[in-house]
Length: 210
Image (tube, rainbow, N blue to C red; front, side):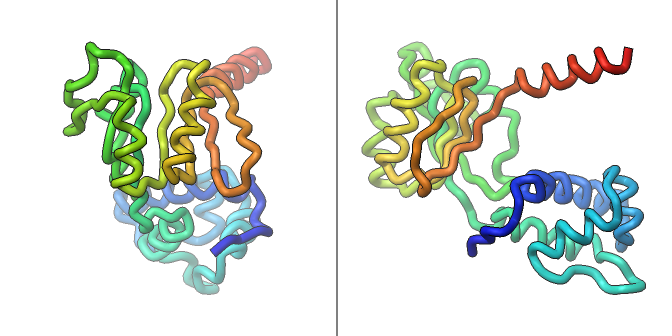
């Protein structure tokens, strides 16, 4: 179900809620008030209640939130129960680091295939996946409906690789190419990831603090 009125700022906070609730659950916390949750996340209680009210009614007055239940609800909102399938294009240093160290399954994604153009990599196994030649991508997508394509290819290859994924039915692209993809399509979602943005934000904050 689409929620047109939910702001991007709220959506960006949802993973923070999930991560924080996961930590609380691991620490044995059974319930928590909006005030305590807000304080631990450096948000106001009002902000917590306002964010969650975009998706329904959670918690009980005088009781607060059941941590396990709220975590499950946030997971549902984030689509973590939808069993997304994903392929990765580009299995160099970054691509291999993602396949071997990022736990896709914890977040509702199943990584089903890896592709590269480097003959030295084709046939190698990474995280249980045999790296396939890029030429096999189109046939793979025809035979295996895929939700998400992960791009860790060189910047110049970002757009043509995205277009091949879209032609194969992919509706979401996680883009690590350091190039913002502007596809001009409403039916395909792109999440552009820039490590440099985070580093430069840190640079700014350090400069302001000194």
